[in-house]
Length: 232
Image (cartoon, rainbow, N blue to C red; front, side):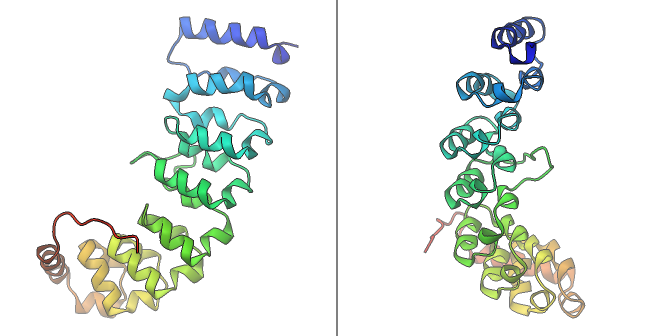
């Protein structure tokens, strides 16, 4: 059967390159058999060739066993758009702190994956998303990961304050009690004046949009333009 014929698939890919280089190779490999998709030696060169279209799109065609291969996942993440492959990794890999950190660090800016997500932390295991120490670490990479943390984490005042200071928009994802916390709301507004809309009604009335802009401006004057991040 042609789906099992490696020579035919290689020929088909070569013909496609000559006739329509703009067509991703993975569109052809979608027709390959399960056994072919589980053959790393055969599939990996095509993933590398097709990286310009996004290595993650070829990665999703791999067999379940290959998508549970830790070393392979880390290598694919180094390819163009490869970090987006995290959504197709096995549950075991999505519970691996290094895998999640790597995906977050290498995630291309202003890019969404096939699920229209823009943060690898969305795919982290429940345990990692509920781990305060780990969440604090990955917020240093991308503070927007706070929105995908567990309910308990998003109700943690210290972590919420840290998130608000780095991205005021995270106020939207905090519990009702924290959105009524004056210090926390001011921290969010200092970072992003438009985050005021997520504060409690009382604080919205207390701190008008004009005042929010003034708070942010005053904060900007007090803070040097470039600050090294201290992980401690």
